[in-house]
Length: 200
Length: 75
Ligand SMILES: [Zn+2]
Image 1 (tube, rainbow over the protein chains, first blue to last red):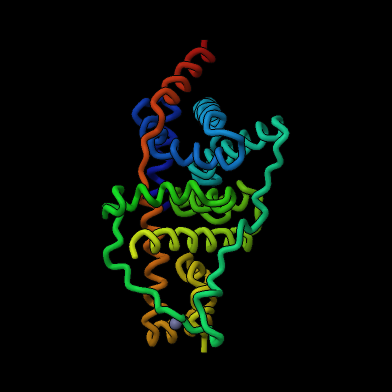
Image 2: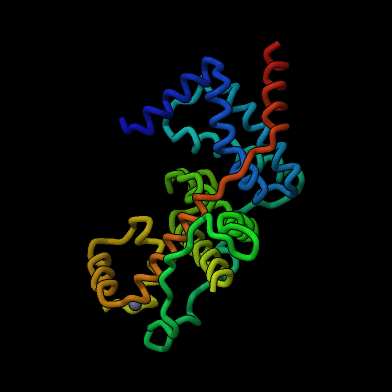
């Protein structure tokens, strides 16, 4: 068993015993991402917060039934996404992550031989703490993620911020593996563009 | 020989460890010779690092409401 799995099992055991500290740690770690992901499915931030609260309630109530077949975070986000989907359907919204999102390809950056027209620069001073235009880069990144198309936003949060396994992300969002790859790549390219514009 | 564009298109695959052995060999050859592509890969890694460094505080009211609903349900 890996050390993170052991730690997770310990968290589950503590949650089952009603340990408030274990809940707080988990709540603090995942709630902002949960609101973000729910917000890619439902109509407003307020509804996304409702869904997130409902999800925590469901997690605490059904933690005894958690079997460890997925990671704890994977299980929590699956509950969240299912709840958000149900709510969206009830509100008459169609939900699909099965699209590439708006195109952001790099074609214009290359000449006819596939060589860089302008070679990318070394980002040796790009750190989360660096202040640009009045805010640190972590805050700029947060804003940039919020502006991504919904499907790209969901995969960045789940895969990069939450570190979920690709299989868990595909299952939760009901997308294929190749779709996940395309979405993730496009999201990274958009975010790179944003940081480049800010810092050059 | 892989072109810069082909390297850039595979940047996510490299980071996520999804390249086949042969593609990885070609990628390494290209990167050994091409500073632009090394920088580009570094930029994409920096994007992931920045995205992971985003920390936000959860709305406090949400925690309290969830816990009080749980208590109410248990009664
Ligand atoms: Zn190159």
